[in-house]
Length: 109
Image (cartoon, rainbow, N blue to C red):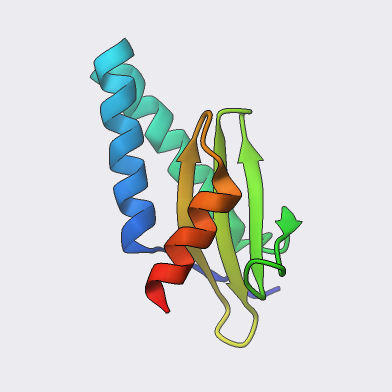
């Protein structure tokens, strides 16, 4: 089984920073660091098992979402041809993920 490369889009990286800042302000930087490290490790695990989560083809072909610890929704695309997983967004609690993601993807087009 091939290992897929996992890449983080610029917006996903910005999302991670915003989540870190929020948690750091509420619970401190040590807690924020640990949370983000575990979240990134989970995203990187898509390299070995990329086809998980819920398909969201109505928003964009190949788009998937998956929850992590009931606190975060991760949006990503799998490219079998390129053996790549692109993390497109990392949305923290309480966000209307599908609307935010659709708007983000519309801005790119």
